[in-house]
Image (cartoon, rainbow, N blue to C red; front, side):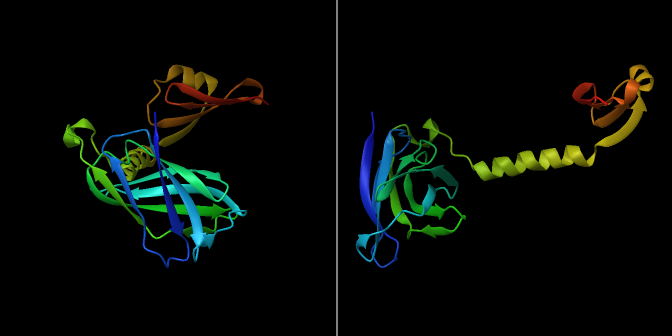
Length: 188
């Protein structure tokens, strides 16, 4: 089951941005955008991809791909995009094959509160989570040791978790281990 709101978005930025109304936590809502330029249909021939960027009432941002169609595009309003009640902003991005961007003036996104409130879906900052994970990976990489050993030496040692072992095998074969986990074997 789904509901699709239809709006016009003028890429010349000369018209009043649209209002989009949705309900907190819903996952079956979509926006169909008809792109215009100065009130006339905008030619989407060169458009290669599109996305909707939503700045939620809590300040976090979601980015969701849309589907191009003749004269416009359709975008899902995901449950993540709608998990915080209040007023947010949504802008629609069009990219050509070279990555050139043209976007709309942000529309007002009005998210009606669910009776369950914010407890029903916790809002998260996806970018913050990615940055935290990348920092953890960078920390592990910065403490990584490298060691080149023979087959016999590797067999006798106790592998350390943060050590990358280059093991010279018989016949010129090289095996790469991270701790005790074999990553790669190159045969001569």
